[in-house]
Image (cartoon, rainbow, N blue to C red; front, side):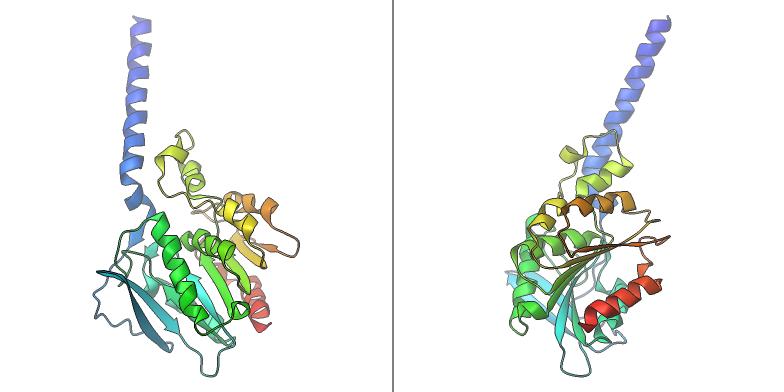
Length: 268
């Protein structure tokens, strides 16, 4: 009788394990990505000076970019790859960090975000990032282009920096890889097989020859500090990993340590 009970309970546990695993596999897009679309004629009405650029990528596919401009001749451009939430409107308030220091900042929406259309795949993310870079190169030299990645965007910016030159790569709350994030929440599952989006930042960062600056908060509850810290061994001499004590995932810009460092980097 006791053996039957143990067998029954093991069967229940195994069934629950499998059901949760299936839920992770089929529901990962809804878990990891929170896009918000807007109509093509929607007016963002940002407070800062800006203009929109729409690139017809392929038939029926549009890349939407918002360019925040400066009052005078810019000394460079920041290509900003945002996080997994909503669209550019969620991140537009970060523009003054760059524009006040004389840099234009261009933000791109990923496929299915904002006014951008198309299928969200890892290859498309990399291809769109390269198109974004080529647009900037029409006006700016590589030593005037800063690549900035935030959260989801850190891996995309790093991949781009591994194949194209820039003045500096700046990462805010980066991750080792996408499956490694899932592994934090689902440690007993084979996340390398379950998660389709890989983005192995740890591999790409080893190919970046330009300077790198990383910011990560110790109280980050989304991409844990321990995850981002796994990138430290791959940094080269002169690169920086800046720890923001008590900083969380969405508030590093509130810390003087972050603002002072950004002002210093952008003044050069």
